[in-house]
Image (cartoon, rainbow, N blue to C red; front, side, top):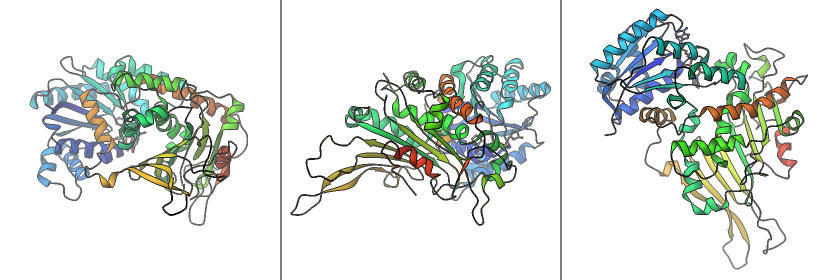
Length: 483
Ligand code: NAD
């Protein structure tokens, strides 16, 4: 039976994430039959909402064109609201009673998922109260799902982890990195380990370099206050980009299971070369977007200091010093106000040792995985030009295009919530992955924080400052994707 029974308690139930992602994802799981009668959701936040009002919010958030009104109504009836201040012990007493009542009403059997969709500074106190006020059950599972950011450096991440770990064991903590729920990110393992062709070539003997791009077209928008304290390195590199690096460079796991996969990912992240300040200077570039006519530059945005040194763009070269990847440069870049919103991975293979066809350079074999906006995988190859004479041309072999596949792509959150219901943490970040990632990122941050003077600026709508191109040019390479 694929049906799940669980009580969800969502902290931050009135927030943006809950409305935009969590309720629609739960509704999809409901529509697909994974959630049926035996589930209920308690939304908690500070606002004094009634159940009726909350249900109205939920109905609205799940309703798109073609949604059945009947289903949305039925679904919303499983939602309850409890006004709650996470620092107030009394509130947990009422929450415990409500949880108990709903558990009985929906015959849930003690399974609980606590989703912390609010600021991490509250995680410790929530975890503590869940335990002390007996909101965790002893007749079912108790899982804690938490959102990024997981600390702002290794010491703060460790402190956060300890504050949760006192009450929840590692195997019941599900750290969300929503990139891991994306279809094309999950495809990396399929391509690598399901095809002997790629399995054989996936190493430093055949791969010349790897390029990872996570670009956004928008500026900081409403998130300025948070962004100013984070910057691109913490916001995108520490989690999403390094997770992609680990999936691309890990050794083949003994089996496709949570513990084997995570073991190999941890090993890959442990093998990241941690830079000295001089190496940071050589291998990493940071910058801020400049203003244009009509668009403000980063330092002119509201809530941003005029002398801010927060980077809105970062590019770098890194190395995973494992047997198979030692010596392969991995170029990464991410930023705001770039030419296009896209997430893509380009694996550039080495040139054939000798071109027997002529003096000119052959095109490179490049395997491209486009994660967004549409999932695509293609391989660039050299083939003969049709005709009397013998000449070569570069062609793209389409391996996959999501529009050719009629199954609709599930939203990342929908996949991850179902995984959490099933107790499968494969696509969640293990604490050790978090720790090794921070160790790598902290070395960069520390070197940057010691530097005086303003940051380099880049033109909005470009792919970043020329320094990001120079990084590759210096090694005789260039970005496969350019504006
Ligand atoms: P939000 O500001 O929209 O919502 C915060 C929620 O927390 C609200 O429901 C608020 O009432 C509640 N809250 C705040 N203080 C409280 C208190 N003392 N007691 C009880 N409730 C309290 O934030 P959001 O955008 O929904 O993000 C939530 C978390 O998810 C954040 O940690 C954020 O970094 C992370 N996150 C959000 C997104 C996104 O797309 N919004 C993406 C990734 C990660």
